[in-house]
Length: 129
Image (cartoon, rainbow, N blue to C red):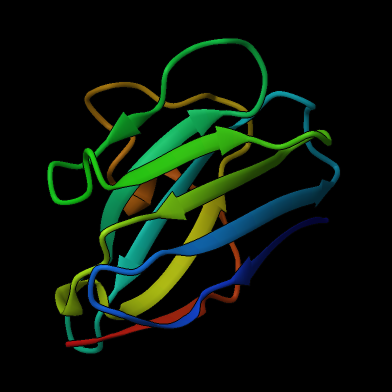
């Protein structure tokens, strides 16, 4: 069984910062693709960023967060962080971390929810104007 657990989030003022963490455990390889998504109620899940948990490859970012959100690898196996800076009210959403069964992530598909098999429970981020 594979478990994906997000932590962090919460509330911030516009222009502020928040951080999210994600840890994957269970029967999964030590180097996997992990993606960050967010979802507003009633809308489709939006891919924000993705990164491999090992190696030195650069993350991918969606245009909506490029230059404001920074994804990095954690100090322990299969953990990643997402630092969210210069937050905007439109960043208010539930944020999810996800991974897949080890077939990696690719520039043309990392942002699709269908590229991932395992999802965390999500954590709420609320940005006040």
